[in-house]
Image 1: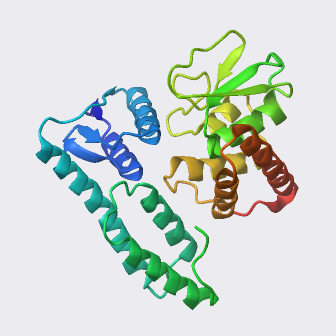
Image 2: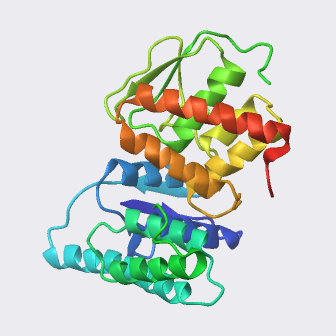
Length: 295
């Protein structure tokens, strides 16, 4: 549960917050109280959002609990289902359009499915509409869902278990451009206490994490003044996937997301995920560095 208060001005903060809440699938209990089903991802999303609110001059409190009134639970479940059902319906209608964008709608459906906690109606129709669109367009079935001089070396960099795009990419960035002797440690989101010589990244209260609307990869690039054009392109791709806000819309994003999904589906071991992700990002960086990035 996110309980928040924004300053009266500027007005765009309310628009920004509303969009972010929609992107993570939260629904209102009251005008300034939003809820999500309990999960590590929900907690992480709301923690980042609370930080953004505080950075913009507002106040935010997070809570976890249950309602004594069962009707409140039913109403919130219905609201969560309605939000996803509405999105599935919009995707279905959009996919039937003559000039529908298959890649964009596929990403949108995948995001909607990830936020569908209670089996909202409409998903089969959306999937069927995308399959029909894919066949119209392609004749095939559905698509598959510079380091600072003073920086100390050889530190232990700590992040949460279950690494995905931002944590994989940030670890690659650290090893290749910030601390070549870095060691990585993966810890549970709760109960961890940092030890000397450890640096936390992409985790709540970490030394390097989301700042404003920047993902952790972008925060590291800014802090260490890494202005390589290829790194900037990778940062935009990582932002597109991690922040789920369609802000930058790099053309490489859907392909990288499919590969990352394959890596994480193939193994739950973080060391294995990181090793495979590092190899992929090495190749991507080499291609972008020689002019392979497209706008």
